[in-house]
Image (cartoon, rainbow, N blue to C red; front, top):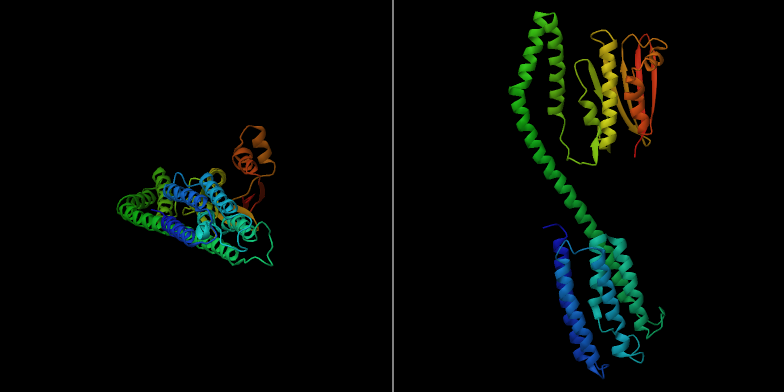
Length: 368
């Protein structure tokens, strides 16, 4: 059951109560010399009330076709007052539908918010004022209290319904976060008791043995740092459409790579995040390949003024002048394709600044 279900139930109760009120008015009204047409309209209103109550209770039937039909049928019943009461009826008399006409207004408001509720109220209110003026739309002589109440109902109920939906969505996200947090804590305990301890042991023993074992120990230490970052990162609800760039970039952290990201998530399309993360990985791979062992690197993520900037900087010896152009001519397209090509495909730009003190690669894209 969703948060909307109580609203639809309340609308169903209102439909039947207002239908009963309309029947009482027909019984007691003196303006119906021939009650036959009036009862015919009441039968139609009853049939539509039963059908609409059933249809709105089924989520698969709930939509704009049903809402439009609801408004059209209600407007037709309202206009039938011309046939039932005639143009010679009492000035300002209550239409045969009475308060039953508010049901589609409330339904539109609950389904699509206050603007839709106001639009439905405008349609019903104009017809109501026109009928009460016996074919004349004159706001100076016709009571408009009903029209004002319709607008208020449409706007207020639509606003409350929208707030309720937002609250439900936030509650769902909170439940997902809590469940993900518990699962992450469970996995973290298992990883800490097994994988992390083994990686730490490999790193320590590799350093003690030296030689090729030291390289294995260094790699084990890097993976240990990555796993610790994954365990530490706060979980967020999964979305197939978007991803947090911060989480993707933090996975590149290691003893020699420092990552700095904004405190709030940087949500981008999942494909964009994947491409940027791959570009960062390629930049770090170049540092490992072409810089002395132990060279440090820093990754900085910034999101402001509608743009996202990722800066990868290292303290290596820099790129010799003309090396990038030469590599591209020789078919080694790491920087040209894996970094520049990826960012260009996202509509961004790459700036590379190199000196004997290090290299800085800046990737900038416009946030969607």
